[in-house]
Every structure is written in structure tokens, then in C-alpha cells.
Length: 138
Image 1 (spheres, rainbow, N blue to C red):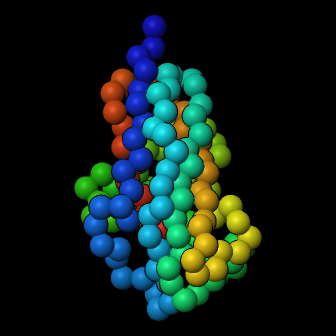
Image 2: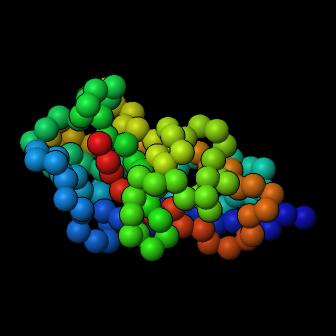
């Protein structure tokens, strides 16, 4: 019998100052879906919200597109592949180092951006609480 795993999003924007962002870009963590409990082979969907507080509009498919990128467990670096996280990818993540891109075609100042991605633990993942540190990147 597989042990259930609890997935907890641990978002960098929620707990520490944002890293230096290009001029005109800023965001505030605005919430997330409830942390799911999933077993080996099961898939759960996670939803994360950020408010655009910068002067620039985020345009999906353009240079101003914003993605939710993975960070290392120690949060020393972001937008890097973390092998302990990629074993959770059901094949739907934006890239090897990014969970998702903004869902909305355009997110102006004051609007919320939605980031949706799924997780599915590999059979080798142990039970317990698993964190997914993340940060927004261009």
C-alpha cells in the first residue's frame, strides 16, 4: 500500500523579499489552492495566484511573460532544475525548471495572474510533507 504524500507549496514571494527584478516588474503573493494529499500514481492540481504590482503588463507568449519557477530547497537559487522536484512532474510542467506560465493572456498592474500545474509523485517518493519552493521569473 502506497503512503500518502502531502504537498505543500512553499512560495519564496510569501516569506522573503523578492530578488532584484527588472525595472517595472513586481508581484505580491495572493494565495494558493489547498495543499492536496496524493498517493503514488495519483495526480493533484495546484493553483497559485500573484498580483501584478509593477508598472509593466505581463503578456503570455512575449518577453514580458511571467513563469512560476522552481527554487532549490535552500532557496539559494531559482529557475534551476531540482531533481528532487522533477520526480513529481506528470509531464505537464512548463519546462524542467518552471512549473507553469501565467494562464491569462495579459495581466496588467493590479490584476491577478493564475498559475496552474499538476503533481504526481513517483513510486519512489516517501510519505510526508513535500515542499515546492517557487519564485516568479521572466
